[in-house]
Amino acid sequence: MQKTFTLQTNQHSDMFDITGQLEEWIQELEIIGGIIVVSSMHTTAGITVNENADPDVKTDMLMRLGEVYPWEHTKDKHFEGNTAAHLKTSTVGHAQTLIIQDGKLVLGTWQGVYFCEFDGPRKRKFHAIIIPEEK
Image (cartoon, rainbow, N blue to C red; front, top):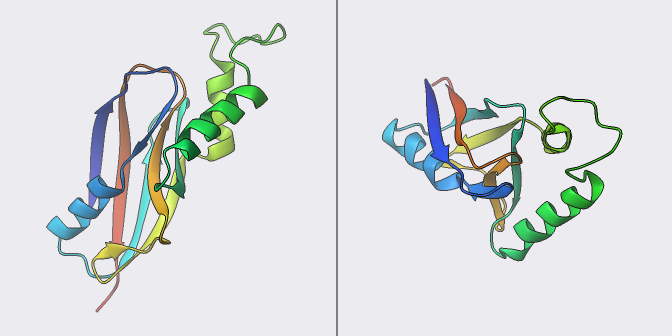
């Protein structure tokens, strides 16, 4: 079971909570248990798990990634000028593997799954595969 999801980003850098989309798909398929792998289909956008209760966490994460990887650096050679986005994606990772139990993602109280945009705005895709538990 595989699915490609799309989203339109509106800012240069942003984090989108995709937890609900993934759980909705799990419920549609009536998956009780197994694993799901979620992967960004871009080299300048990643997938991460982090707090989804306080929106300042997203703000702080994007700010600190921007400090570590400034958009413009005099030594960058990549002709597209988006080396910082590539570095941010490599840092947060392009994919996450999550457990499904009782028809829901196994996440901590404050956790959510995020699509991380580092070179927007763009139309983006992420892909997921579910490997159901054997009965």
